[in-house]
Image 1 (cartoon, helix red, strand yellow):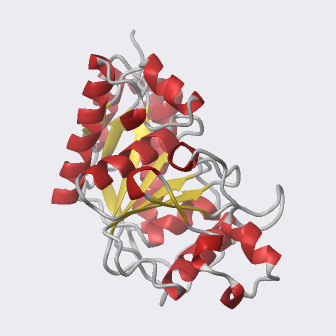
Image 2 (cartoon, one colour; image 1 turned 120 degrees about the vertical axis):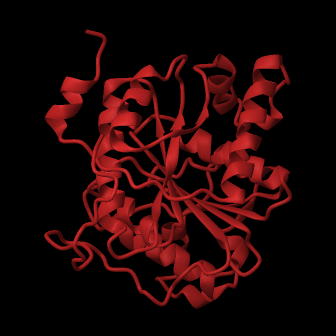
Length: 297
């Protein structure tokens, strides 16, 4: 197993790269903040939306922030694609004082409040700027004052500023993965990124969510090596796929025994996260070592 006591030297945030630096005075102070990560297409938005509903079912006031230019994080909650923060800011020539709350915050299923940060046009700008402006706008309108839980649903690109920016606000980072090499390889890079950000910010790893997987043997093998554990396990269930097509969360789908079991797993996960988890001091593997570790030979 990797060295669980690894301590990285403190360095300036973003050293060796060009990043949009966030305003350190813009903080989310009262709410529990979770950032959901994983390989592109792994089911982060489905996981985030259903987790948001689960928190709301526990009586918590929840805000979900989609951090992807395709702005589809919250559509199962709101039933349509919402205008993005960057779009509404552009419509007022970036004079944020002209915006009303209802211009960029929308109430979704079971009272979950939904925001889509959006992103710059393809090939231009930085997603980190967009996330920073979104949090700033929420603070200016006092929308975080009465919020219990904030969930950032983060795009899959590990090297993007839009990927890194939520780590400056989150208390715990959660990684969604399937039981396959590509997903676990991406998870290892995410672990490294979170470890780097933890030098300067309070964010720590909270654990792994196994998704679209009948088994977790490859995930378990990796977790044992680096110091992670599985928080929740969601099978490759067709009802989950169909819920996205129906523009609905799993809590709105016909309640078959399989759907009920998934709902209960989300509620258990939400309660576990609300109660609080000690941070995991994971140590990422070298790329070559992952190739040697995983597989069935």
